[in-house]
Length: 245
Image 1 (cartoon, rainbow, N blue to C red):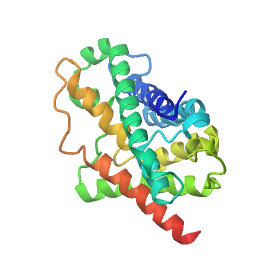
Image 2: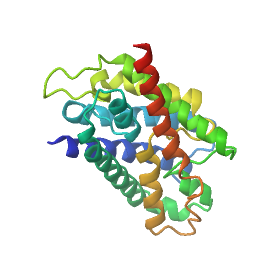
Image 3: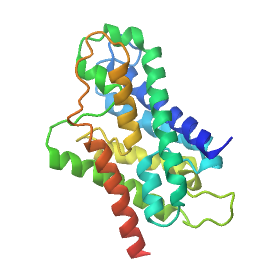
Image 4: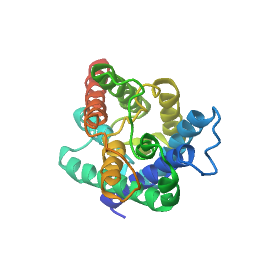
């Protein structure tokens, strides 16, 4: 398996399981939609474990970035070769789109049954709880800052030989899952904590392409925030990490 394939598969597993949790918690008639207050705990826990699975599979091969903000942040920090960045970003977006497509295919009956257009879109991508461009952007920036900054401190961020690629996989899967879990519980209430451009934009594109009854708009006006915010957060984390080290 090549790093390119590993990033596709790792990101696919992340989104297939993560957006699958969203669909299970949000859509009408699923076993997970019980109308109680456990929804956010289910979602944050599910996404954390989805990260765990993606890292377990892709980590030994690609470092399991599975997130463009991580790839860009590590590159800015000088811990990942810039010539590998386009390959990783392409793989991450392809994996995210594939994962979202299979979630739609699996939950198609429930997407068609659900009447709330916002919940249908919410199974794919994020939306702000209270729309406010600056604070929504700040939320995504800060959440991703915590992610990448912690990654830089959890790893000995050096490439020791040609077979070692620094990334999420270098942390071990469980610490990464716990990190994403606490970000979701502590910082995710404002925007749904995309903290990953591929996680949001890939599924949003699939939402626009697949046939869903009465699916509503795709939220393109907001879509740039969970792309720009995470990238900015990753860059800031790399810069500050470099200053403090």
